[in-house]
Structures are given as structure tokens and as C-alpha cells.
Image (cartoon, rainbow, N blue to C red; front, side, top):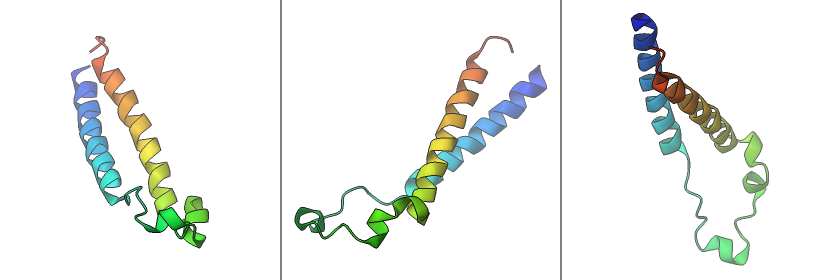
Length: 79
């Protein structure tokens, strides 16, 4: 079981690094003063799910779920 815990710990560290990188790559949610007048509603704003930003959001959600699962597995007292 010691080898499995080492592998899971290394996987956990890699997931942590990936999560930090994904969060830092995303743009901020504030649209600035253009949002007040409605100027922020552009083509890219409407199609965010198909853009790179949408992909980053989806990947962040997936990596965050993996982070939580590995954290729970590492905290179980079966090792």
C-alpha cells in the first residue's frame, strides 16, 4: 500500500499544479466600465462556451473534481 500512496501523492501534486495554472490562465470576471452600458455583450461574450475561455472553465471544473477525489482518497485511513 505504500507504493499506492506515493503514486497518489505525486498525482495529487501534479493536479494541484495544473489547477493553479488553469486558474491563473483565466481572465477576470469584471468587464470594466463597458459592462455598465452593455458594451460587453459581444460575439465572444455570447459564445464563451466555444472559446478558449470556455475550455479553460470546463478544464478547471474537471481538475477541481479530480483534486477533491484524490484528496478524499488520500485522507482515508486504509493506507
